[in-house]
Image (cartoon, rainbow, N blue to C red; front, side, top):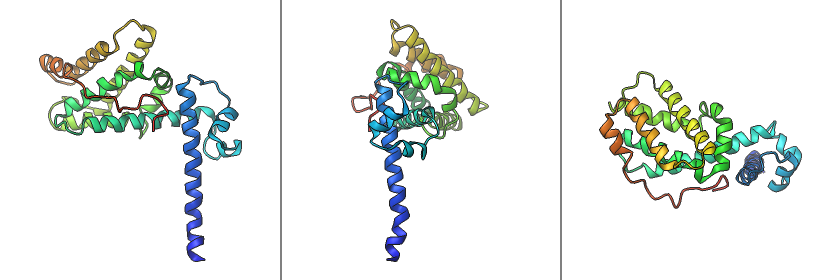
Length: 220
């Protein structure tokens, strides 16, 4: 009996976690389909949960979409971590991650659009790409690869470049996303203290195979 009582809160927490995950997955599927104006009722029906359950986890639809973007970007960040696990140079880790992320704007345009909308608030998130970029910048500075006095300002510059790049690619579909991303990455490396020749060389290195990388907001 005691064990059953003790396990009750755990079952409740697991049920709450499943409900939240179902809502987030539903929101991600709506994002991937470009249905950003869908009513909350339609999202809860897709998640197979009640309206009341929605408000147990989120106050607004915007809050749900924000969480959905965070978790989708967190998965993208986890993939970047895997793809850079064998690299020793923190400058190359930073560059490769930025180059792959820049390609996300064309690879997943709906997620990109929501990212551009919520970008400023996501810079301060403890999930997703911002904490990973901060980590890589700080590691490169400690190793003497980057000459940055304030990693937080360097992160702000990086985030601004990433968001403006995404907007540029949306506004000008004729532009080459890979070429533009690599050029901005090269400019960032030079700004952070890497020589022009080395920055150019780093940004011309082959990127890893991303066939297994999540391509949609609903990837699991």
